[in-house]
Length: 257
Image 1 (cartoon, rainbow, N blue to C red):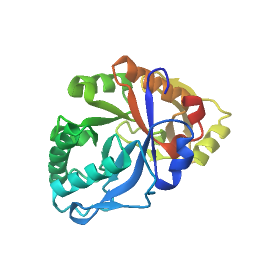
Image 2: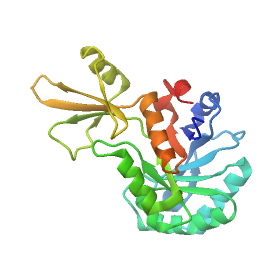
Image 3: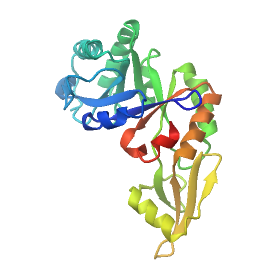
Image 4: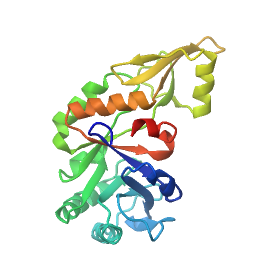
């Protein structure tokens, strides 16, 4: 915990032991929606207890299914493993079937003392669910983004804190750019002698460079300082939790928590 803000570490089954040494709440990435909206478990230890259950949709075939059966399966898993709630980590294009699933699962699980967290694009499906609002931006103001989310969703906002390592070719204000690997970012910083700047608006570091073709690139990236700035901005607006992918922040996590 950092000054009242809670970082929830999202970890795959093989990462949970390492992630748990930081003493933060874990969100376990061990479940998927299968064909026909079945719950599929992958590599989850029988001894796993506490934290949150994450359900992805990488295996989902887009067909409808028995939402009640899946809701019951989620409730059983949470009860068995003493989980605090369920995170529906849906990354495919929005689906009517998944909206119906959220609309059925969220009130039932909430009534039974479990939290439900959903992507922002499913926010209209249920007012009983908490809404994941991304903090990664390539332009604009994070403060404005969080304020607008607070006005729209009230206390339901939870942050989705992706670590920025993004290379944007200019001019391209509408572009999300290309995600960089750590080694690529380190090489670019080394070439520039470590020179970087900080955007108060986006709560992120940045620099620019020209490639061999003379094109200008705008690079945004995060570290412990920028993550703390994002969490402090959120706290000032009454938001006190954020989900972060453990492998993305392992290098600076000790300085963060």
